[in-house]
Length: 113
Length: 111
Image (tube, rainbow over all chains, first blue to last red; front, side, top):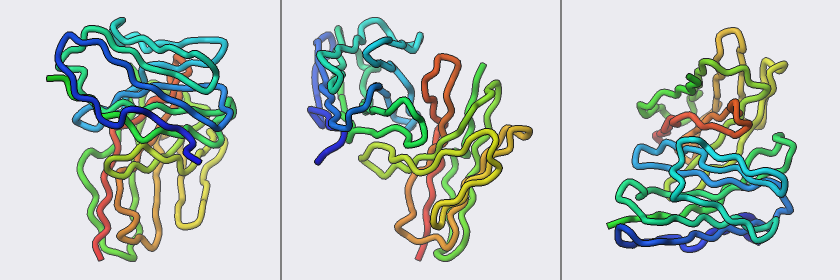
């Protein structure tokens, strides 16, 4: 019954490693997103993606890359992890109509040591 | 540059009172504004959307106003309850057509 799911929920890794976070939505939504929430709780958009277009927030380092194997999945791959990447990462999805808002996943807490 | 500002200090109120949270924005011309609730350790949950041509919108004990002249939205919770304690976030669509969030205001309702 989970609408938007993410795995893993916690991820602890060393600097320099490459890691991926998986996201799946079963809502039939056309658009998926990745957000980063830092220690000050600011929620920042990283990517917006549907089957037509990828929109990248210009402040996101190119070490971050979204990968979508199909409409229901948008995974986040991070290369050469840095200490500053430690945060909670949220996946979300929405329909084209904004009336119902975004549906967020439970978040993945990434800790880079 | 575009900015969305919410009071970063926590709002503490007594149960039964009305909580009012503020969202101010600059350099936006939003078609609509959204409000979300976020509980600790969870993702935000969508509450309400108000369009630029709507002055006020209600949903149960929630009321949202939208003043495009003042560039401000107010979020009210009437007859507040301890279960309303959470962080509330406002959000606007930015120039890149992506939803951008304010920093959120933490609400604490004391019994």
